[in-house]
Each structure stands twice: as C-alpha cells, then as structure tokens.
Length: 454
Ligand SMILES: Cc1ncc(COP(=O)(O)O)c(C=O)c1O
Image (cartoon, rainbow, N blue to C red; front, side):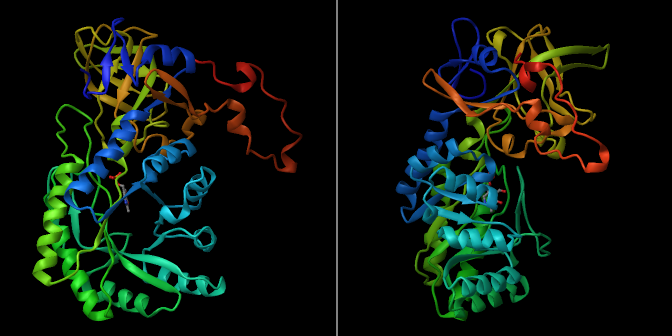
C-alpha cells in the first residue's frame, strides 16, 4: 500500500486514486497533473467534526483556504459544514464566487488593504481577524465610513513556536504576525477593541506553526492563551466567546512521519481547555481550529511524466520530470520531503535509488531525494504523494511554465477542478508599450498555444 490507505494498486499494477487509474488520468489530462481525492477531503472534514462532537462540542472547524482554494474546493468544504479561512481579496472573491456563505468566513491577513477590508465588510464575513493595532485602528475608521460594525478576533503571538518534532517557548517574539502577548501589547489592543462602537470583540486567535507532529506545543499554548483570556477579561470586563488556536496538524509525507489525527488533537485540547478554564474560573470558550494541510494534504497527488535520466556513476541518478518547483516549491523553500511512486509500475519492486528533479533552471529544483524505484524509463508516469496542500496554492509561472490542470476524482469519476493553462494564457496579460513596435504575430504550434499532454 503506497503510504496512504486511500491509495491502492489495481490489477494492472497501476496506482489508483479515488477509484481512478493514475496512468489513465495522466494520459487523458496530460502531465503535470494535480489530482485531488474528493472522498479523502470529505473524510478529513468529517474526522475533525466527529472529534469535535466527541471531545469538545462547543467548537468550529474553519478550513484554511491558503492550503488549496478553488471554487470546487469551496463547494466541498461548504457542503461538509465547515467554516472557511480566507487571507486575501482573491481568496475571498473565490469563495464568494463559489457561493460560500460569507457569515461562515474568517478573514485573516497581516496587511489587508483598505480595498480588502471594505470587501470583507461589504460581504459580511463572519469574523475579521485583526493582526495589529494599526489594523484595528484602520478597521474602525472603515467601519465608521461604511456605517457598519464588524465581528473581530484579535490575533496574538503567544511566544510558542512549534516545530515538526520539537517545540520551544520563545521569550522573544519575532514574527510579522499578530500582537505580542509580551509587554502588555495584546491587552492594550483588547481594551481598545472592547471600547470600540464599531467593533465587536468576539475573542482571540493564535497560530503556532505548521506540520506539527508533536502535540505538546498545543498544551502549552492553551495554558498561555487561557492566562491571556483571564487577563483580558479582567481588563475589558468581557469574557472572550471564542478561542481560535489556528491550524498546524501535520500529515504523512514519508514513512517516517507519524502524525497524530484530529481525535488525538481534540482530546488533548478538550482536556486542556476544561482544566485551564476551571483553574481560572473562566467560562469555556468556543474552540475554533483552522486546519488546512490536514484537510487536503494527503488527498492530493501530482502526476508527472519521466523525461531524461542522468546517471553520475558512484554519485547520483537524476530523473527529470516535466514539472518541478513551479508546481511544487516546497522542496526548494523548506527542504520538504515527499514520497514518489511510479504509477505505471506501482506493483514492481524497487531496484535502485534515484533523485527526482524538476525542469526549472535552478539546481534547487528537486522534488524527491533518494527515492527507491523500479527500473525507470522515459515516459513512465511518476506520482508524488501528499501534494494536496501548499502546492497548487503556491505554484508560480517560473520559466513560463503554464500551471497544470487539477482533476477531482471520486469513486471512479473524474473531472476538471482547474483547467490546464495554455501558452496563450501566459502572454494574455503582457502588454507592448507603444515604442516597442507593433503587436507580435501569434506564435505558431501547440494546439492554439495549449501544451500537448504527455
Ligand atoms: C492563521 C493560520 N491559520 C491556519 C493555517 C493552516 O495551517 P495548516 O495548513 O498547517 O493546518 C495557517 C498556516 O499557515 C495560518 O497561518
């Protein structure tokens, strides 16, 4: 079984996702191709809701759209009854276009523009998560100008930094996000927000990190945030309704990753909240969680076609594929580790160790280091697993590579979530200043500028 229970190998020895043969998908839609397993996204949503119902029913699950957002993804999230976290006018626009109920949206961002704040106010988003004193002031002005009020959370930085396998408490808070608890800064902002006639302060938010595999940092965060809630209540005279602890739960990228699931997280948080609330005689807040990666991450697979293979005897074999850092920048950005499966040879035993390289002009453009693979040849279909989060959403046009298509699969059905970009799409927004001469003739070749699949 290739890494995840929802990925299987069919009788042809091909990788199967969502009941679809990955090799057939590659043939039909071309590569690189993002594939998203709808049932896996839905089961992750339900796992969070089940865990909430069991361990802390007073709560909300807010999907963090930065992990992956398209109108189709919004529809799935809405139909599962989750809330949605958006961080820009573009994400808000996408969600509104999908018909996502604005009152179920949380609007984040450390530097929302006036236009974005106005857009949030006009749409009637459920919460605006205010990231700084300066934003608090600006939002008050804008709400007054629009003659409306806004429900807000204040984002604070508790000084807990969670890493993949360890955690540390930092006294020194060095982050562009949030208002530090240290030095009374967050308390001052809370006082100001509570006094505002235009803002309804509903509670507080923090986010301690991502790809968290050790839950200890969450325990510490609950204690620190409940201390803050007690101080804020004393300072403002109002109990916080909501405590939003952000996202961060890790997923399985390689065999070495053993992530806790939503049930373990909610059990720990439920116990910690009850314990810490009782200790300070505080009412239990509504718990808000904002998972992104753990909703869509392992539901995604990216399919590539193997190109040239370069063997450096005694050193390394590079297997180049037709995508890379433009569709998945995480390896170059964070040295992220992935698992690769040769989709058309998924039942074959590995015979060698190779490294999978992208086709971009950067030595750091790698996808997987030291992957065990069966005998490989040009034209094989290679699947990189767990690419549902922070791949498409972080994709670029580096080297003018058109962005790949994304296909939704479910129980043997498949259809496009995002169409493949064409070469013509790449030049669509280019303009020729008059002194550069007349418009260039349309370039020849490639199905009206569309990349030829495969
Ligand atoms: C404020 C906030 N909430 C939620 C998330 C989602 O985190 P994850 O995808 O790790 O669950 C992030 C990620 O950076 C974040 O910054």
